[in-house]
Picture (cartoon, rainbow, N blue to C red):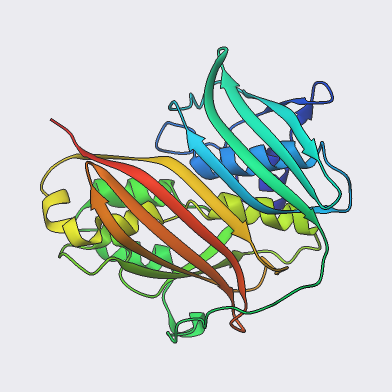
Length: 286
């Protein structure tokens, strides 16, 4: 999968009935369904059942079972409520008749009201930074097998420029903060719902890895299993996903084999466009 059009085609689901949809899987090299795919497709399914004047402002999802990348995913939407200002939907993703993911999403008609935001962090701009794949090149000869796996996992439809050393390339323990610039490689005129779905897909990139940064020395010595448990997003303002967005991430806590992470997504001009939280499993293998 090389282009944004390819990714949008994947996110757009086959309609089976008014509330049931069928989706195919992103060919993730790690052998299980990518969490960002399930988020984006679930949001797309919900959007197919709401009035045209409503825009998503939040979603809250739980990953229940590991998805089989070789099987299509069935999405079922529950029309919970259609109010005067807000619309609420519940989406459940199934494989082999078992729920693998569920999500609640809320949509709102456009309204005027109070408006404020926090400031974007003052960090290096994307023009002076190396890409994620340029960072990966540094381990090409030191760890060729890991290098090949990272190259294979590359999301080719996005430009990604980390500000710091990428979390999974860290060899020393570090403070749990990460900053990544990202955008789609192609310019495209798409709707706000489609931009939100692409942002949901990309919001799963590197987030839980931020919780591993204080523990890299131990993780580099012992095999570890990492997987998303839940994921929530709030969409604050319109944005362009084909222009640079700053994903500022931190991890306030890790305990009981779980890491908790947060993310703020800013436009290049400093506008806060979305917020994200995620908890993930970080379990050392026996």
